[in-house]
Amino acid sequence: MYRIFIVEDDAAIASTLARQIQMWGYEVRCAEHFQDILSEFQSFDPQLVLLDLMLPFYNGYHWCSEIRKISRVPILFLSSVSDNMNIVMAMNMGGDDFIAKPFDLNVLTAKIQAILRRTYDFAKAQEALGCRGAVLNTADASLTYQGQRLELTKNDYRILQTLLERKGKVVSRDLLMQRLWETDCFVDENTLTVNVTRLRKKLESVGLHDFIVTRKGMGYLISEEL
Image 1 (spheres, rainbow, N blue to C red):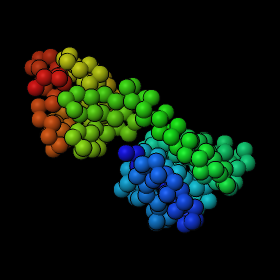
Image 2 (tube, rainbow, N blue to C red; image 1 turned 90 degrees about the vertical axis):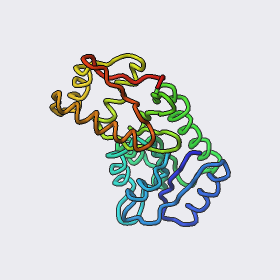
Image 3 (cartoon, rainbow, N blue to C red; image 1 turned 90 degrees about the horizontal axis):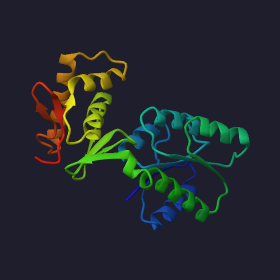
């Protein structure tokens, strides 16, 4: 079930949107604390945000920019201000689509379904790497396993991505260090060892024991077989 976060300060509109979206089986939450939208966003962890442009405290542009610092989740702007300048600005700030108020609920639903399908269904094969029931989600740099979601650091993600792209094959330490250097951080042998050890502990915390195997003198391996 997809989670959709509605950021709309007009209670009547927010309620109508929530009812319409829930009819299609989606999980919905409406924003309540407009001075701290980002905390609500992180708590709910949605797959789509419906974001009004005109809000109390800070406008939709601000919150779109803040969300984009931590997530690539699709954002659909809602606004009664629909001139070309605002539409262009919404897209440039990181929005994925724009719909003008007043809008037809069926048209909005179609847009929501299209965005979710385009983001998560069509790209699923390309945007998910996995092994032994664990899935690395490239859309938000997280790993899921048996209903548990594990937040990854940039280095965690790079290590897992490199190993899963070469699943069943030994990946040299040199290659892993090259991939980590791409994050603009200096990485030596000791740093790589520390990163792998820390990542293994994270994986074990969700039940993934011996997920990354060491091949002495060669490198590391993720295999389908235990």
